[in-house]
Structure formats: structure tokens, C-alpha cells
Length: 345
Image 1 (tube, rainbow, N blue to C red):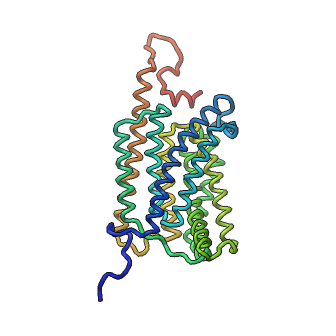
Image 2 (image 1 turned 180 degrees about the vertical axis):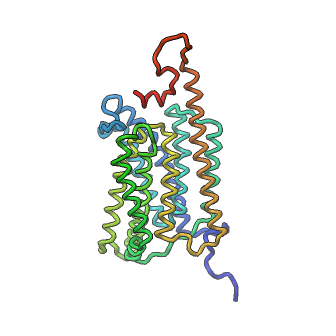
Image 3 (image 1 turned 120 degrees about the horizontal axis):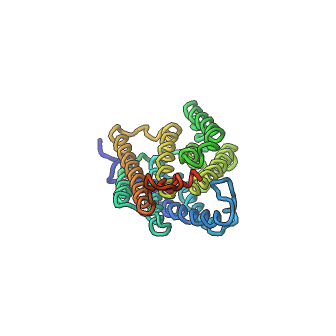
């Protein structure tokens, strides 16, 4: 009596559930593919923009660019792995591991795109790894679901319906009011749409993934209309995210898009998951606080990565831009940082 015959909690670093281990490895492989896809798609967008209307200006010439499609296929493979990860592990565990894709993207951008990575950016990458490890060791176990109807009940509870309604209203306002005016100069417009829509999309992905897992295990969930509703929501969210992420990548620096997208997307997804799946129910205050600390560590790493990237850009610009003397004529645009000059033009 009193012997520990009960299954250990995932917050116990001595034992990790087999489902969460599967989700962990799927999430890591997903980050490898997705991080690489940012660079491949960026190269494709650059190549397409050289011969047609840029995506950031509303063009779709990238759709006939093979390199962009190679990046898209790479991202799809990563998303499939990510999709599978959500079927085995909770969003609180899977989503923060997307920080690994930022590290991969930043490293490849440094080597391939010539987007220099400052030494403190490397420290930011280390912080992302430390934060991810902390979350992995203290994340909750996957909620046991027996039917897609249970998922539907969770998705139609008042709290989550309120969250979904607020997200839809915010997305419509951003697309109608802010994207036309500020899309080319304020990255939050594009990334805000991607992140808000993505938080709903992940909940549907997790629901659809669990439904398919149950189906493959012998309990057919494809007979229920709720499964197909989740599938439609996933398709809609993925299309919207792809469209606005392309605009963001074509308009702004890759090392700027990746961390901001990660921070907003992950924060909103965790909020949505806690509301819908109640991931923190049954966890101790210590476990929840540790997970939050791990997440804050990841955020610190991504922000540091972003800020040091700006330092490199400003430093590089100041080396090559000649500022006019007061007694010289010349264009008023001299001395303006390159990325701001582009927005003016």
C-alpha cells in the first residue's frame, strides 16, 4: 500500500510516456523540415520576384517557380510530421519545440542567404534549446480521448467558442483595415493573421490527428461529420497561413519573420490549447510554473536572435551608406537604412 504502482507523471524527468516520446521525435523532425523550407521558399520567392510581380506586392508568380514548390513540399513534409506529433503529444509540448525550426532557419539563412548571425544570436539559439528541454521534461501527458465526439464537445464549450469568435473578428479586422495600409511596413499585420488563424488550426489539427489515430487503431471516426468539419477548418487555416506567410517572407527578412511568427503563434496556440484541452488540469503549480519559465526562456532566445539580427543589419548598412555633409546636395534618401529605403520606394 502506498507503493508507486500508478503511472508516473510526465513532469517526472525519470519517466516520459511513450506517446510523448513519439510526439517529441516527430516534432523535432518537423522542425528540421520546416526550418529548411523557409530558406528554400525564400530563394524561390526571390527568383520569382526577379521575373514577375513579387508576392509582397500581391503577385503569384512564385506558383510557377520550381524552387518555391521544393520549399513548399519540404514544408508539407514538416507539417505532416507536426500533424502526427499532435496526435501523440499535447500542444503545450509540441508547439514550443517549433523554436528548433528558428535555429535551423537562422543558421541556413546565415550560410545560404548571407543574412549574418551575430554572436548573441547564437546565444539566443542556445536559450531556445534550453527552454525547449525544460518544457519537454515537464509537459503534461496527452489527454485520453475515446471518440471525436469528445473533441467536438471540447471545441463547442463556451470558453473556446468565445476564443474562436474573438480570433475570427480580429483576423477580419486586420485583413480589411490594416493589411492594405500597413502590410508592407509593419510585419505584425501579416504575422498577426498567420498566428491567430494558426492557433485555431492547431486545435483542429490535433483533433483531426487524434481522430485518425483512433481510426487506424480500429475505431472508425471517419463516419462522424465532426471529423470532416475539423478537416475543413484545417484546410482553411493552412491556406490562409500559407498566403500571408508568403507575403511576410517576401516583404521582410527571414530572420525577422521566423522569431516573431514563432513567438506569436506559440503563445496563441498554448492559450487555445489550455482553453480547449485544459492541458494544465491535474498538473501541480510547480510543473506549470516550470513550463512557463521554459517558454519565457524560449521567448528570450527568439527576441535576442531578432534584436541581434537588427544590430548586424544596422552595422552593415552604416559601413556602406555615405551620409551627405551639410554643404552637399543629394537625395534625401541617402543615409536611410536599406530596409526602410525599400519601403519608401
